[in-house]
Length: 200
Image (cartoon, rainbow, N blue to C red; front, side):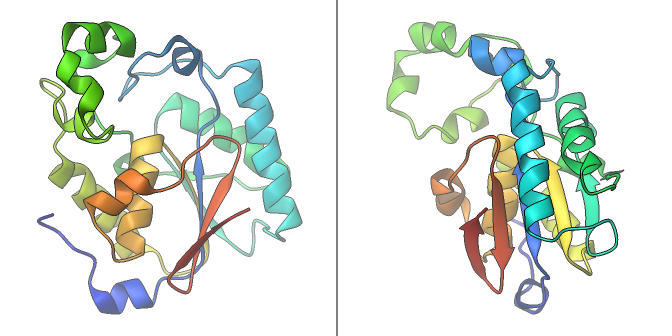
């Protein structure tokens, strides 16, 4: 990666609570979303509510943490639902948008695999780099590093599957291989604290 979080900044990072948006209609359909949007499903709204309860049980309040969110509607709706229980509103940061998958946006994953059999054997994250007209890994990495560099206190971050993996890898001083292996999931919260990762 061309841009790295400095060791001094990384070691000084406060607690980060990192959330992915809830399930969307395109998630269910197996479509590449990238920087387009699809509404949350009923399950996705429940997952956001569950995240809100996890925040409440963890003692998060509007005063204890800052809150930042991707500009994309699925993340903003998740933030709205999850943060309502702690009476907080997230500030929008464009750098937390999902990776752009270019010409694959809206396409079904199964169709792309059928047309490109070699994709079945590729590292799942490397597929994103193969998207024609898509965003480079250097670009998304630079975005998440820039976000981490401005965080000064405990922060709740609401974003996307690929973006949150890159962000957590950068915060832990790791690289692309680690990003691919990061735990994911919807309806959960990943915690970065004192150089370690856990899950609420």
